[in-house]
Image (cartoon, rainbow, N blue to C red; front, side, top):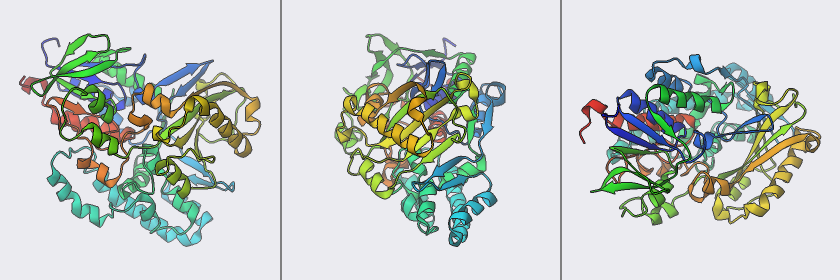
Amino acid sequence: MKDQPHALVIGSGFGGLAAAIRLLAKGWRVSVIEQLDQPGGRAYVYRQDGFTFDAGPTIITAPYLLEELWTLAGRTLSDDIDLRPIDPFYTIRFDDGTVLNCVASVDGMREEVRRFAPEDVAGFDRFIAASKDIYNVAFTELADKPFHDFMAVIRSAADLIRLKGYRSVYGLVGDYFTNEKLKIAFSFHPLLIGGNPLTTTAYYCLIAHLERLHLVHFAMGGTGALITGLARLIEHMGGTIRLNATVDRITTAENRATGVRLTTGEEIAADLVISNADAATTYRHLLKDKPRKRWTDAKLARAKYSMSLFVWYFGTNRRYDDVYHHMMVLGPRYNELLKDIFNRKKLADDFSLYLHRPTMTDPSLAPPGCDAFYVLSPVPHLESETDWSKEAEIYRQKIERRLEETVMPDLSKHIVTSRMLTPQDFQDRLLSYKGAAFSLQPQLFQSAWFRPHNRSEEVQGLYLVGAGTHPGAGIPGVISSAKVVADLIPAARDYRR
């Protein structure tokens, strides 16, 4: 393919790998540049002491988006990946010890609602119908379409008003449920993609229908098995992935991207560049010498960014069979905790946790008789000025005590391996601006046209994929961003330098 036009992809997260596959299928010569020692980006994999830990995403929805990529490579997803549905999707343990099972069946979920609040069953049915209506517009029609023309916003305004997308997720959920626990259970989903349920556009109520339509899945071997599979597709199609190579800047000539320069000084020429790096980092750092009209440093600094995450990975020398695969362990506060995280940017003493036990489904991720876990706590990004070099271990111990008191008795006696990921790591290791885990928050005026465009407004021949561009964070979102970009780029045979 040496005579074909060359596309260079910066970063090998789900968005970058998906973009590489789609351009290879269009006849481009593709090189992926990754600064870490293995592909994946936020979906990195840690292996230590016989345990395997997915560093980032663990919940797989919309598997048809993955199937599309395998089809483009001339293969079938099931040839390489053992993807298994999880039901219940997750369990939610409230602070008083009551547990809501979020099951796949609408009838089953209706009975769970009835168990908590019989008076909210009718509201649940109306919410499910509303979620489907939102999904059919916000995801099916808009998620894989570019928003480069402001007229696209105007054209979608009628649907926005009709579906109440100008409301917040929590606000819209409150129209359907009176029980406070159910309001939490049906509004927390934006946290999975970096959004504040109190301010995220109500369009993200679509997730309830997305989960029931396509189910929640787990890849045997962990999410890292998907990354490995995507990387192999790229190599199978003739693309290359170069590891341990950090891009210092995107090179330009006459306002057009011409390639990249690595921190070593090496320059790599390309006909176009696709950045899977954090969107703010792409503009602030990789184009730091390029005057910008829209995404200036000042505008990027003013934008509202997602929360960050504190993640503790640990393994135990016993199994905790009472802990479900995906489990939410909620604290005593919801609204005020969200305000601490997103508004006050204060590291609170209490927390709500996502506890992941993949060894319930795949015991091979830990030694025999052991369990692998990660527990995730949403925390403020680095504007909180928390010194994580001092606070990380203190915070980890608080989480350990909380788990010990709630769902994992005697935990401290059974930990045999441990590691942590803090907001500082998101900034220093993953090059995420302000240590935000999901780039820009998915608020109404930071969505669609208001987000950094998939085709850069600043430099010709530069495209963006990943959490910081349209349609946003989450595996379905970033894979869809790659589809948007691929549709904007002609096949190699039609490209004119």
